[in-house]
Length: 621
Image (cartoon, rainbow, N blue to C red):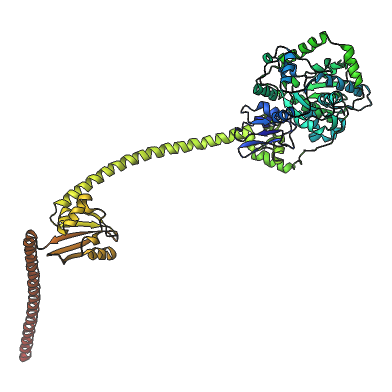
C-alpha cells in the first residue's frame, strides 16, 4: 500500500518547516527536497498542515471508498464526533447526514456512541487501580509514538480500542458481519491505525473530512440538494465531547478534580512529548496520562485549514447540548448495556525505531564543524526542530539532519559567501572598467590599423612596380594594381570580386611562386631575379617581412619603357661604379708598389752613404 504521508519533490522549497515540527524526526533532506521515512512516521500530520507549499500529501482513499459504495454489500459511515467542529457551514446536522447518504452510504453511524462505550471501559480500568498507571490509547499518533520511541512504555498503554473500532464492532453486530465500514475523521493517522484491527473491528477505508468535502463537490451534493435525515441508532450521549480536552472523561463523569483526580490530561505536540518523557523518568509523577497529539481533534490535520480552535470548541459544546435537550436516556442506557460484553480489548508490541547513539567524539566533531565548539554556543535556538545544538549533532550523526538545517551555520556560511561575492564583484567591477578601457583602446587601435591599412593600400597602388605580400601558405594578403595588371586578365576579374586578390593562391597566378616559397623556408632574401613571364621579362625581388610567416615581393616588368630607361641608367651607374672601384683598386695597388720602391731605394742610398764614411776613416788611419 502507498505510504501514509509523502513529499512531492517538485513542490518542496526546502523551508525545513516540516522537519522542525516532526516529533519523530521522520523527515530528512535528500538532494533538494524533503523525504518522509515511513518506518519512523507516526502519522500525526503536523508536516502536512505546516507546509506552506502544499508539498506534503496524505494517502487519498476516495477511490477505495467509491469502489465500496458501488459494490453489492451495505456500507456504513462512522462519523467522528469532530463533525460538529468541522461542518459548521452546514446549518443542520440532519442535512449533513442526508448528504452522506446521498453519496451512497447505507448507514450513517454516530461515532459518539463508540466514545460512550470506550469511556466506560476507561472508568473501570482507572477505578480498579492496582498500582499501574496507564496512557490512554484513543489517539493513534500517541500509540505509534510510544511503540516506536518509548517501547519500554508499551505495557503502560491502556489495552482498549479507540472509539471508531468500538463503533465498527457495534455496526457489524447490528447490521451484519458483511457490512463495510468507512471512518470519517479529522485524524490522518487513523488511515494506518485502522489496518491493525481485524475481524468485526476492521475498518475498510478511512476518509478525512477534507476528502469527504471533495467527494461532496465531485458529486455536487449540497445541503440544499438533500432532505433531513438522522443518524442510524445507537445514538451517543456525551461522547460528542470527545474532540475537546477532557471530553472523553466527562462522557462518563470520571472525576477531574485537581486535588483528587489521578489523571493528567494534556494536548499539543510539546505537552505530549514532555508528558511522556516525565512519565518515563519521574517516579513521583504517579498519574495516568490522557493524551492527544493535536490541540484536540478539532484541530486535526484532516480538518479544513484556518480553523479557529476556540470557536470550534464552542461549536462542539453547543452541538452536544442541543442533542441532550430531547435525549432518550433510557434507550441509550439499554443500548450501552446490550454491548457491555463487546470485546473492546487490544494489545500492543514494540516497534523500536530508535537509532544507535553516536560516540562523544563524533558529537564533538560535528559541533566543531558547525562552529559550535564552545558550550555557550550549544544552547540552540530551536529553529532546526531540536531543543539544543547537541541533540542536533546527535541527529546529524544518525543521518537525520544536515548542516544547512542549522540557521546559525547557514547564516555564517551565507555571510562568508556574501563577503567573497562582494570581493568578486569588486574585482569584476575593476575588470569591467579595465575591459572598457581596453575596448576603447582596441577600437582606437583598430581605427588606426584600418587607416594605416588604407594608407598602405593607397601607397602600394601608387607604386609603378608590382607589389604582392603572401602568408606561409602562399595565399595573398595584399597586392597592388600594378601587380594585378601585370599578371593578366584573370587576376583583374578576380580583383573585381575580391579587391587586392586577398586569399587567392599565388601558385595559381604566377609561375615564379617558388621564389616566395624559398624565402619563406630559408628566411634569406632573393633580390633582382629575372624571370620570363609570357612575352615579358620580370625582375623579382622577394624579402622577409615576418620570418617563415610572411614575405613580400616587388616585381618589375623590364620590357616596360619606363622600367627599361630606368634599368639602363641603373645598370650604367652600376658599371661605372664597378669600373671606379676597379680603378681605385689599381691605383691603390700602384701607390702601394711605388711606396715600397721608394722605401727600398732610400734604404740603398742611406746604406751607400754609410759605407763611404767608413772608407774615409780607414784611409786616414
